[in-house]
Each structure stands twice: as structure tokens, then as C-alpha cells.
Length: 210
Length: 210
Image (tube, rainbow over all chains, first blue to last red):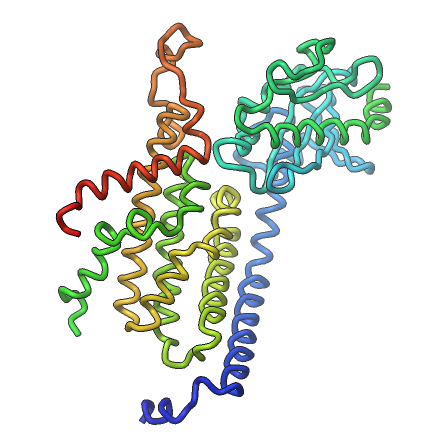
């Protein structure tokens, strides 16, 4: 019975093709909208928790188990888009970073000590840098290189990421870290991101210091 | 119509060896280069492709008699894209950590030529069960090559396997030993050379059966 109706249908006619495509697209659209909206609540909660974990990482609290509780305990949000962290009675200013890597956006957080001069900790993340090369900026060893580095040289933002031998000759190693081998473009992206965002939040760092 | 007949066994086993999608048909090379610098993304990518190829094959096989010939590629693409989107949404909701690691690789599955190749060449002419076996077989054949390449690149490029240190610290040059990680292995070009070596060995072993 079914075969007979199939045989009668001309699957090559224009009308059939158009109706088939329309019906298929509508079904798929409803299916995807249903899946996306029914999972959105859980996904948003995951993203929010992940962001809190990233902010905590920038003050060297990595791999915390109960992110929500630790975040509530340590971090307070400021009105200008920065955060203040209270670590063992000392205040740290956390500055958000946004930039562009080789394949997609980069972002991160960098925390500054109360002296307004040195880095307390840093965290970077990316959307789609090359696995094993650019993607290594998320690894602890790279981010830990920033701890204790100085930010301002003669009042200008100097903190940066340079390939070995490519740093300005006058710049002391207190002001920069080495780029990731094989990931020059991603490392340049991290460099630009740090410099532009710190410049933007320079006044926030000044007022935090005082 | 035996489920595990000899023919079905061939459908499953062919792509694992004599008709391997990467080594013999030379498909899916682009993703083989992109995700194999370390073993873990290679494994997850292989498994994701296996699951999605199998289900896309089954769906297209069920629809094959109704699909208008002129828009069949579009229909196949819509099915694959819908499946990939659903899988990526589910990952984001329930295993957020894994989905963050995979973001770009999951998207890449849509453009994997093995998927489109199997849908067009097999699922359009065969029943759902055979298509399912064909999808699993091709996915595993692809995964096998990725795992081999990822294994070699990670151990020679980073001295680790799945992130665990294999080459002892003392053997490295910076600690007074004689060993140095091979930076070439972390480059995408090396994946191409390794895939070529894999094909060479594969051909040499299977010479008489061709």
C-alpha cells in the first residue's frame, strides 16, 4: 500500500521539492528551538559558574570545588566593570580583558596588587585557538608567568608578551613574559589585549591605589 | 535479512582497514590535521564523528525514498547540522567542561567530508541497519587514524600522553639530560607527514590484497 503511494509521488517535481524543503526546515527549526530553549536554563547556569571560576583563577584560586560559595566569600563587583577581591585581608583589583586571537576572541582577567604596580595573578581563555599551540595560553604555566610582573613603566602600560629576543631592548624582564612557542599570533593577541585593556582601566587602577 | 550477516560484517569492517576513510579514501584530512596535536581532543573528535555519522546515516537512510534528488545534498547537510547542533547543546548543558574544550571541533564535524561522503555514497542506497553499521565503521576507522597520529604527536611533541608526563623530567636538556621535545610535532604540517607515513605503512602491509 505504502509503496504504491510512493510510486505515484513524483519526487522530482518542483512542487514536491519546495514543499519537502519547507516542511523539513520548519521541523528542524522547531526541533532546534525546542532543544535550545529547554536547555538554556542549565547552560546559562553553567556559563555563569564558569565565569566565576575564571575570575577566581585570576586571583590564583584555581580549581576551586565550590565556585559559587568561594566567589561570594572573596569577590565583590564594582560599578565600573571591575571586581575587588579580598585575599587574606589584602585587596586586589580584578580587571576584565577582551581581545582578538588568531581564530577568534580572547578574554581574561588580570588582578593588580594594592600598590597599583604589580600583577597578582592572571587568567586567559580563548574560543578557538589552535590546540597544543595557541590554546596553551589557558594552561597554568603560562598564566603563572605573569605573577609579580610590573605593569607601568614611566607612567605608561608596559606589561607585554614578546617572542624571545623581540622585546624592546630597554625593557627589563620585570615587564614582560615570553610568548608561547609556535603561537606567535595568539601571543601577539594576548599582548595587545593586555595593553589596550590596562590602558582603558588605568584610572581605575589609580583610584584603587589611593 | 540477518542482522549480523557476512555482508553486514564487511560493511562494518571495510572502513576499519581496507577501505579506511583517511588512509585509503584520503577524506577528512583537514580535521585530522587540526585536532591531533594532543591525544585527548583526537579521541573525543573521533567518538563524536562516529556517533554523528551513525545517526545521520540512519536518518538519511530512513528518508532516502522521499528525498527529492535535486536537493539531496541540502537535505543531508540540514540533517548533519541539526544533529551537530543538538549534540553541542546537550554537551553544553550536561558536560560543560568537555564542551568548552570541544567548541570548535564539534562545529567542524558539519564540514567533515567523511559524513557527507557516507550519506551520499551509502545511506542514500541502503537500509537503516546497514547504514548504521557503515557509519560506526567509518567513524571508528577515522578515529583510529586520529588516535595514532595524536599519540605520536603528543609523546614526541610534548613528552606526555593524555597530559601525563611520560618522558622523565631528568631526561630533558634543561635538566641536564639529552632529550628535547620535537617542536615540529606540534605543527599542523607534521600531522600531514604522519598521515602520509600511516598511508605508506598501510599500503605496504595490504599490498597483496589490492
